[in-house]
Image (cartoon, rainbow, N blue to C red; front, side, top):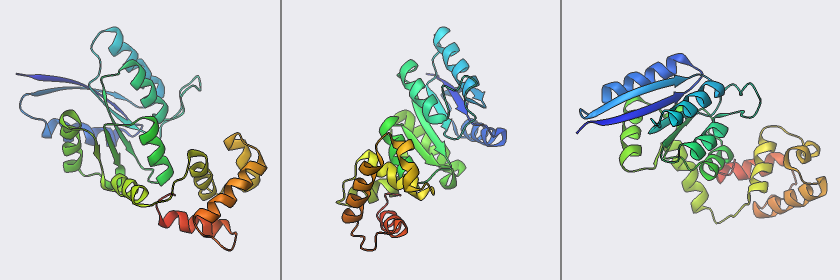
Length: 224
């Protein structure tokens, strides 16, 4: 029996998309028939998704790059926003996230907000791994690439529990954001941020009060 699969690939690099397409068509099973649409930005992706729902030919699998040009109305700024939109209008679709980002905060955030059936860091990617991921996501999800699994393992084996706000503070500090500017990103007061940083220094046993030392210790335990 033929298994017809509708696929949407979202990435703003045409050559990368071509590679994905070729890999899937070459590695598909004999009974699989793939129809692949391509979107290069958020607007195109939303249009394809809406059309698939209207025509009652919903996508079975979406490949979503995280770093994308924002939508023209500004409502979507990344693949994360697109994936969340897909979860609402295509509840049965399997979502495979592909990204260059390999920071712990981003990985954990994507897993928490999207819970993708597949999650791969592009630097881990080979054509064989992509083909394996595709079949695994169809039959036995989730499929995470090595870097993603490594971050998850580090967080699980660490007995340190850090809430989302503290994780975001670490992430922003690692991006070079100064403490005085953190409040604008986090919607909490500067004194609340100072309290949280003190808490983080205690958790990671940082004696010298330096952000660099805090980040170094957090990085060692997979939180940055």
